[in-house]
Length: 145
Image (cartoon, rainbow, N blue to C red; front, side):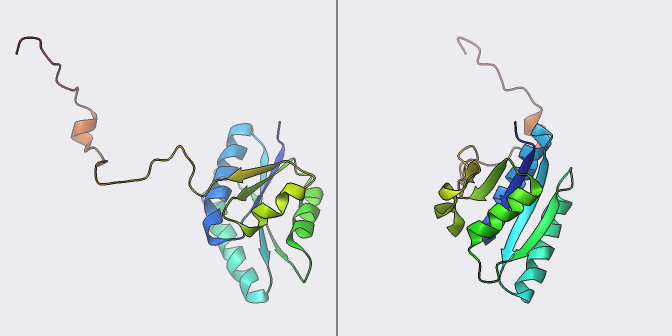
């Protein structure tokens, strides 16, 4: 199975993809590399901070990499990092502009949808149960009453 996952954290919505990669890495027992692509020194500092926050949430500390594009195509930089890290799979948010170019990758790519289908959207009809309601048995309907 997978031994190294590279998760590309490039847009504001891609934190979910990073968290998914961290969970997948924990379940599979593999190493996770969080990769942020930047184009300037200010962006590098922000990306480093963001990756450190994501890494702090993880049970198994991931490796954080911040790479400057320096005029090179993003796909080239991602594949270079993946080769250096000996990655088996790339994980990218579907909201990322890179999602369009990664099908040309030589590695398998996992695209995480913007909102995973297993997570319901909160609405007014779904209210959290109080601790008292969680642990009480529902009243059994008795026939004839």
